[in-house]
Image (cartoon, rainbow, N blue to C red; front, side, top):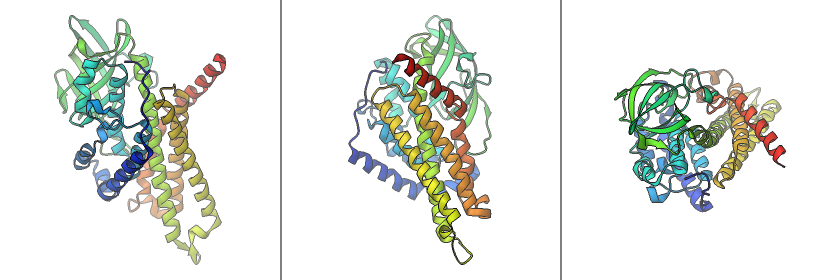
Length: 388
């Protein structure tokens, strides 16, 4: 238990082999169908089944619990490849991995044995339930309450912005107890309702289609006391700690979307001809491509650096915040620039850049808005300065 464990680094050759396998999978199974699934807002059942077979739900879960036992640097590389094909797939993996990380860092051995093997196989999916209608970035304003009743807790309240909420069967939830905010695992069957739990609202989104984002209402849901993670009143720091993994994930999926936008722009610039030559030969377009490529590389390196620091067991709130901030802003900028390079056709659904343009804003907002990231970065820098 605790954050003292340090990941064993994955062999670079193994990492490269895994990344290439995922890249081939994306090219063959994801990219050809992503646009159709996205327009239909359809959950990618067949793709998720293949992701299960590949072991992607257990990338970071230790082999002793049935996972692949790979390091965070490999994880962010996998996420980049998935986001390159269709960003929505990374949301299905992200919240699942955050719940697994919570268990790996703070659960008892009995709890790990109970949940991690089925999560590693993808048989059970994880969802994180922190935000509420009146408590987003202001996590200390959580009102969802867990009242102790003998060997159970009685849960009441509403949770918002729950990715995978309907399909998840292992939900990591923050609730207020007499001792403060505590972390629990809610077990349920996939579906719109389960013993005092109701999926009360499906949120329609600008982008990020095909994966459900829901509100979940808890009404006298009875939770075994054995589902408490760690100590009462310690849930907030536990969950805020795993948000570092979430922010690194957001950064890596932003890199994937940014790379997809850049590749689309680079290809189109060589194919599209104006005034007797490809637009890639016009200086104005070349300047755009140069800036896009430079920012893409910087975003990837920031993300890899944050992942390495987290994997080493070091505090990385500043680094994760920097990676998430820069990579998400880069994705938004590159998606916009790709559309401008495409011109009118980029605004149509004939080209994938309009999807990148709609997906990119999620990364600016998700796992803490970029305004919040700037505050996290500044406060972290000042705290480090005072400690020297």
